[in-house]
Image (cartoon, helix red, strand yellow):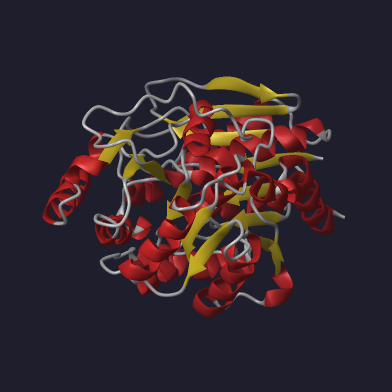
Length: 395
């Protein structure tokens, strides 16, 4: 089988935690590699500036990333919509020049889905899509979000017209049916995975205390983009509840220059709560280095308003570190309550603080239980499940 994967707006080689680059990039890199090892030929297409020129990066056996030069170097995500016909045309030229025949198109995010829609019609092949998040769900679940009507309408059209939709959780299936009217018979639930070779328990030695961090308290860790949907204010407010109860450090990984205004706002909130010296914004950390931080933490916090899955939870658990999370994705099915973490209902800082404190106060982390709970989420298993869904459409 030969699959054309589309990721127009975000390069899978981008720095996770930066603007428009998050779990989807990790998903695409790992899934492509795992599918390639199963003998599937994967061409993963993304956009680069028209001035850059086309280039190919090998991701592993049978898997390659192809940069197609379309449009300006810097362009707002929504404005990429106008460049999608040119992207589809450039991809078709690549396909024709290589005399390639793709059995299936697998699009990621609505922008890629729109380009995939063009190509699927021309090639007369099945079109599978994974939205990763839904615009209407973001608007409904996260205060202050205002995803454009263009996205909302496109997601409805794509849900109705494509051959099938992959969602990573049962909750996301419900949201897809609710907001896009997608028929349940065309939706396949295939969870996200984790690299169990990279993410495993490590000795925390060598993780230096960041400059400015107060005390020698145990580490609360956050990993992710710095944007409203991630709900960081809840975690900082929870840390404020813990100020007089326990010695701790809160390390926040993610964000770059684009997130400076948000970081400054969170720092002001921390100062108002009297915990500014206990919180350190580390910015971007290389993906390969994340297991050191997970292993050094007593608990990882995931305070999001909305996640289609929550891959950070898998990474943390694989490293033996419990997770305290809001009720997003299918984390209720993954986190074992009060054993490998806790899922809280609602957005009460006091409730999140109590959950975090219950793990900070333990003499030992439940390392083995955490690790064991995610052993079924390795990428080889996820690739097998995804491939089965693809074969249903192709055969």
